[in-house]
Amino acid sequence: MINRIVVGAGYGLKDWIAQRATAVIMALYTVIIVMAVIIVAPGDFEAWRGIFACGPIKFATFIFFLSLFYHAWIGVRDIWMDYVKPVGVRLTLHVLTLVALVGYVGWIASILWRV
Amino acid sequence: MSQRTIHFKIYRYDPDKDAQPYMQDISVEVDSTDRKLLDALTKLKAKDDSIAYRRSCREGVCGSDAMNINGKNGLACLTDLEGLPQPVVLRPLPGLPVIRDLIVDMTQFFKQYHSIKPYLINNDPPPERERLQSPEDREELNGLYECILCACCSTSCPSFWWNPDKFVGPAGLLAAYRFIADTRDQATNERLDNLEDPYRLFRCHSIMNCVDVCPKGLNPTQAIGKIKDMMVKRMV
Image (cartoon, rainbow over all chains, first blue to last red; front, top):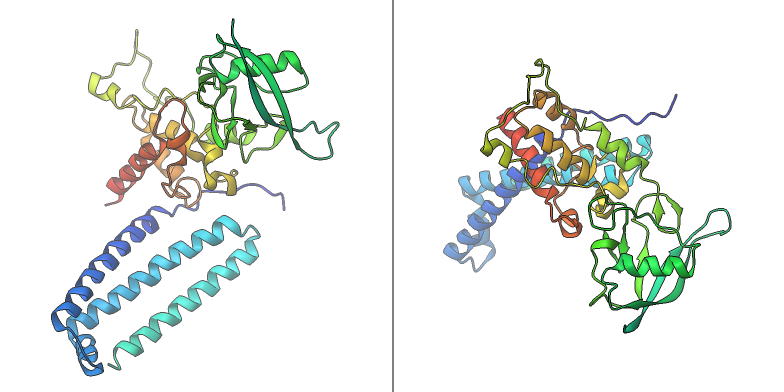
């Protein structure tokens, strides 16, 4: 195959917006969780558990982690795109990154709903 | 006339003679009337004519004498000798193939520039005199049309170093916005389509090296931000 430079994948904008939106969500969650900890002032394990057993916090925490993983996907993919040139190696790394992140989603869900 | 000595450390490489590049220490006497770095380089060239660099207008209009001066890209003709730390370390623009000494091969840079179609696209029959714009519409082109394509910005951009074949680079994107912003241009959608790509536009992470080095004081990061804004407006 002739080695032509091809561009024009037609995506980029959605990821760019998503990266910013997820960053805002993570910042908001940080404020919420810091406030919750200040208000509850947990002294023991049960009090800490109480914070995360509360429905809205559970919801917010799950959304926070989803945002973190999506944010990480875009960031890590950017690193592979910049530094890894062979297409096969890059595709493998993309898939491995996705597999790890999807696994983390399941893991965090099981942790949160065990509380 | 009082004279002073300027000490240089210059990147030298002649592919016909040298196995690899090296840094040469060299000094030159300059007069008090020699105000800019290019004046000193002219004296240096008279002393050792094997030193190669590009130059033309010597007043910051042609953009030929862009080089890496003490670690920062700039034009030799606009850089004051006064206060310039010595030895003055001169290297070619980073990230582009070196042809000889301070001369780089700018093919890749211009390829990216041409890829954004840097000309007005308007399919209406040309009017008798000229295509008019309101003063407000014309105002938007200020800070865009002044680019002299010296490549100081693109060659200071890490994203351009890593992907010069795919990322348009700050100079090309500034020019792209110059035509996207032009109310006389009719290809706005095609231009945005052409840039909506993870490599061509979105390699820019707004680190603003381009703004830091632009010898004309332009702001490619802001232009890139405006392109992204227009894409968002179009999508949402």
